[in-house]
Amino acid sequence: MKTLRNMTLLVVLIMLNFGSAMAQASFKKKLSDDDRMEWWRDAKFGMFIHWGAYSIIGGERGSKIAGGGAEWAMDKLDYTVEEYEKYPEMFNPQLFDADAWVKMAKDAGMKYIVITSKHHEGFALWDSKVSKYDVMDTAPFKRDVLKELSEACKKQGIKFCVYYSIVDWHHPQAQGNLYPNYNIAQHDDPSVVNPEFPKYFQNYMKPQVKELLTNYGDIGVVWFDGDWITDYTTEMGKELYDFIRDIQPNTIVNNRVDKGRTGMDGMNNKPGEFAGDFGTPEQEIPDTGIDSDWEACMTMNGTWGYKPDDNNWKSSEDLIEKLVDIVSKGGNFLLNIGPDGFGRFPAQSIRRLDAMGQWTKKNGEAIYGASASPYEKPKWGRYTQKDGVIYAHVFDWPKDGLLKLNKAIKFKKITLLTDPNTELKALGTSREVIVEVPMLAPDSPVSVVKIELAK
Ligand code: FHN
Image 1: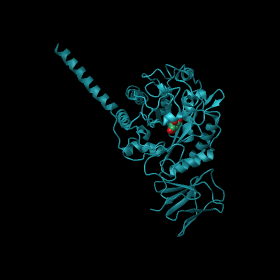
Image 2: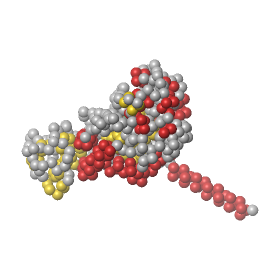
Image 3: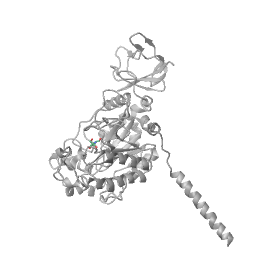
Image 4: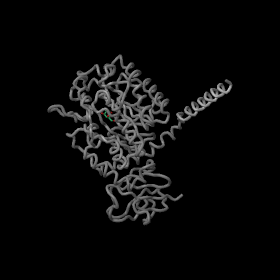
């Protein structure tokens, strides 16, 4: 009897111990803000993916073509909620291949992926238990896109991040009750509110965000959008930010979680007063560096969601120069892809990713982990800096073979980044540092000259 009691006690003790080990294993250390932001600051280059039921529509309805972003099809092409629902019911992208998507991002030199878990249309790309308007219940696809993509990211060493729209054109307690009469003017009309919105926030949005943070491993960034609607308040924003950090303490959250922006500005107008870890300039690059974290998000053509009619593609050269420009000003570049309704990246996007990958493979040292230039923008290109080295990114290679650097540069050794063994001759004058470079640019569209500084 005594032995039995002792054994029971032993089992209980073992279980208690096991329980505390489990608790320890699941406890996540809260990092300092600098430690938490470190991977993101070093990463510099990420892929934005806009994918949803709108990717089937492609921005076209009969003879009508939506202006601007095709992910706004429901709104711009005047669908009622019922009419629009047939697209999620058709969502069956048989060519979706998470491993191939992640590989394309990785080969381009991107370090993180942010995918629209739910855009303004309201259709969720994951197995949401809070909603039937998702990829498992409404769509014939019945594959959890976020699960496949998060696993592929983990396998390939890419940070997995999610975009989530606060605006929801389908949910009746958000904007769903306003269609088909919701028009673009009302989006900015402060009197257009849904008194039920706080219920959507507490009982739908927060539980959905919780699912994203509990079912897909570590989430690098939660990227909110739709902060501009009057229904959404700064109190909700702060509550949501704390809610996220309580679940995953190390997750980074963009500034659109709160109401700190004026209109569609990228940066918060009163830094420190609002929740959010970084600013989000959209389709623009600030003229100069900014003294806080920021990320410029941009399309390759003029649309976020798939739109075959949009052929306004930026060139690969332009995109590479934009990456350099952004890094030279201390920002990150989040470059968008709009896959089609079958799950394919547009060929034009793949070509640009390939070109960017060829360039980042050779010149990544001057990008990843680099910080903003300490000097003014030179006429010929941009500077970045890292670990006692200045990198001169030359867009316009000097025709006379003489590259003129900022006079404040005290150099020890200067080489081409692609040819570290050949030291370039240089002379410091009172007006500039003149470097003798080869007559032909060693790379295109940007050649990098590496300047090791004297201590
Ligand atoms: O309305 C959206 C748009 O569709 C797209 O998602 C971009 C990406 O930053 N954000 C919104 C507008 O700011």
